[in-house]
Amino acid sequence: MDERDVTLDLLRELLSRQRLGVLATHGESGPYASLVAFAAADDLGRLTFATTRATRKFQFLTAEPRVAMLIDSRSDADLDFHRATAVTAVGPVAELEGDARDEACARFVARHPHLAGFATAPTTAVLALDVQTYYVVRRFQTVTELHMR
Figure (tube, helix red, strand yellow):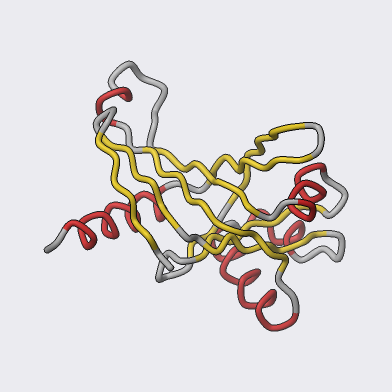
């Protein structure tokens, strides 16, 4: 198994275990970070999340679609510095519509059934981060870049 396959396996495991990530956006007033629930596509090329259109997050995404999402395995313990894995997914975000929205929303709700009412509300945007690159940091300083596109 080559390094890419090992990294993909590590990503699959982490993205299936973790349910929340930190979305980093940027707007006129500067950088902004938001906690978001997400669902990963089977090929790991897309991370889907939802937000109300009235949020600062949505306004920033509309103005500047390039974002980063951090997903990690920390447990808030001292050993995390040496054992935790942190993944940053980088790429553009777009609001999904029509069949693409319905399919992504179904995947999102399957992962987060308690958010079904929120995800399907007419005021909620279902968004896709099309991952161009994953930056995987393990053992405090081992960094791997995985280009998806």
